[in-house]
Image 1 (spheres, helix red, strand yellow):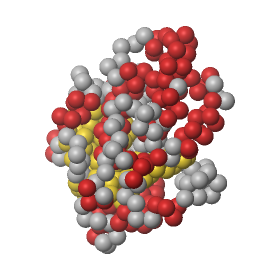
Image 2: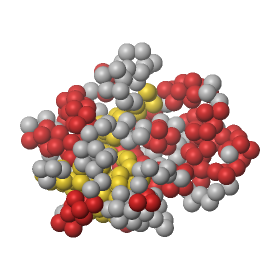
Image 3: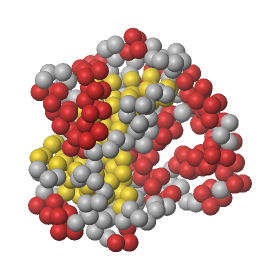
Amino acid sequence: MNGDSDFDDDVFEGVPVAIISSNTHSVVNCVSPFLHSHREEILEWGRENVSEIYNASWQNPSDKLYAIAQHFFRDHPERKEERNQMNMKHGIFTLKETELTGIQVDLIDCSRLDPEHIDPFFKLPPNNKKHRRLIVNIDYAFGKQAEDILGNLLLLFGPSVRSVNACGKAGALQGNRGDLVINDFFVMHPNDLIAWVGNEGITKASLEQLAPGRNVWQGGGVTVPGTLMQDRPLLHFYKRLYGCVSLEMEGSYYLRQVQRYVSLHHLKPDVATRFLYYVSDVPLQVESNLGVNLKYDEGIPPLYAITRALLEQALKVDEKDK
C-alpha cells in the first residue's frame, strides 16, 4: 500500500469489510490509542485553555475529550505525527494518495486495535487478534461523486463487503439542530426513485439510549442535487407524500450502487446498509439554516452517538465469519 507503513493488502483478501462514509475524524477518534492513552493530558490542557468546553455539561465524558482534542492538536501540531505513528502501530492507516478523489481514506485493521485505549462504549471481542475485520472509512463524498467512489470500492472488495454505512449530517424537515435521524429509505429528487435501507442492528430506541434527551426522527430521506434546494413547497411535498424526515445529498447514490452490485451477484444479497445522521439545519425554519454555525454541544454529542452506533456493528465478529 504505497508508502503506508506495514499495511499489507494481500493479508486482507477475503477479510470482512465494513465501508463507512463519515467525516472520518469521529470514527478514528473513537478507536485512536493515542487519544485515549493521553486522555488526562488532553483534558488538563482543555481545563486550562478551553474552559468553556471543559466546564460544559457532557452526558458522555468521552465527548468532552473529542471536543477538546481538535483544539489541542491545533495548538500542538507537532503531536499529530506522534498520534499518527501510534495509530499506525495499532492498525489505523490514513492514505496519503487523494489526488483522484480529493477525500481522506482511513483503513482500520480491527484486529490490531488496543482494547485498553478505545472509546469505553466499545467492548472488543475476546481473542480479537484472531478475528480480522477491515473498516474502510471514507470522507464525505459530494453528490454523484459518492456513487463513483462507492462503485469502485465495491468492485475492489466484492463479496467481502459486509456493510455499507453512512454517518453524517443532514437537514431535517422537523425538530431541532442536534437531533438524530435514522433513514428507512431514500427518495431521489427529481425522479422520485425509492431505495430501502436495512439499518441492521440499529433501532430508534437504541439511538435514543445513545443520545438521551434528543429527538430521533425515523423515516425517509430525500436526496437532493445541492444545498440550494430549500424550496418550501417541494420540501413539504416530500414530507407529506413520502414521509421524509430529512434531506441530504448522497444516500440514493450509495444505495443504487449497492443494489446494482447485488443484482450482478458481485455483492452478497445480505449486505447490510445503515444510514444515520445528525441534524445540522432545519431548512423550513429560517433561524436554523446552514448559514447559522452549529455550537459544539449541538454537533459533537449527536455526531458521536451515531458514530458509536455504526462502529459497534462494524466491530462485531459475524458468527459466519469465525
